[in-house]
Length: 343
Image 1: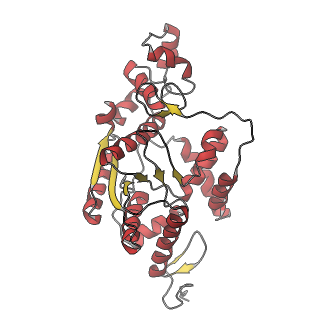
Image 2: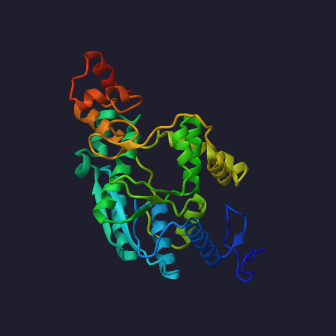
Image 3: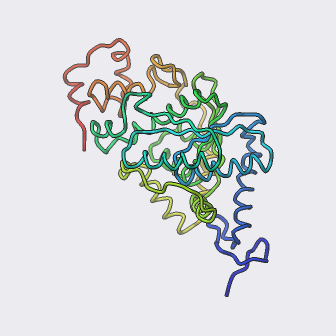
């Protein structure tokens, strides 16, 4: 027997919301999904009227849904935002080049300006070249660090006041779990923040309008709206640490659907005991980017690549900062350890 929509009680339900278990028709699901994101934006005061906002666009489901919903809500509620698309080309043949074609189509569909910045342009390296040197074990470290900085540089080129990313509830919960497992108190303290502000030059504030949206519902929204998005996973990410956290979270969700929100709320309510030493945020001596060390992670990773020492930026590299800054050569023993790569 057909199930009626639990919201309007008029149309036939086409889905059961993973987040709440409610049976909804397409129109009610669209409205509910969009209204929840609107409430997230309003309650957290994510934007100011007249603000220019860069939408981090990869061509995937999250950023495509984010761009679509931001455009819809901006027009529906007159946010007064100037929206733009910002993409990063990591230089991954057969993956990023294809997804960027999707972003270019999104630009035409949503009639938004688009800026693409590339690793090769910013760092002189592509991820294809980096993987050839470092292998598939720590490549995600390089990509994540470089991408964060590349987004800021692209945002500065666009002169936007804020970047919004497509991080969803699943992503935030995974990050909480990863930081707990690594014992990373500093990141655990800030990973659940819906927006980040920085007084440092060269760092553009970021926000996550989809913070409380389940990944499954984002997929359903994109499917029923027939949005144009790229669905292939990165060819270099099968061994990423996040993948194990994701699998664990999915197992929890299958038993208790509220697990995702429970993990996020736990992360939001964690407090650090007084007296615990926390990293002090400063700036990189070389590039001026935010860093709690003399050199930022990106500069150390780049130094390692350029010296042919791919492990230089992996793990505890702080002891090498003085040598790098003064351009001193490393000892033969240090170079031997840093050249060793586990493929």
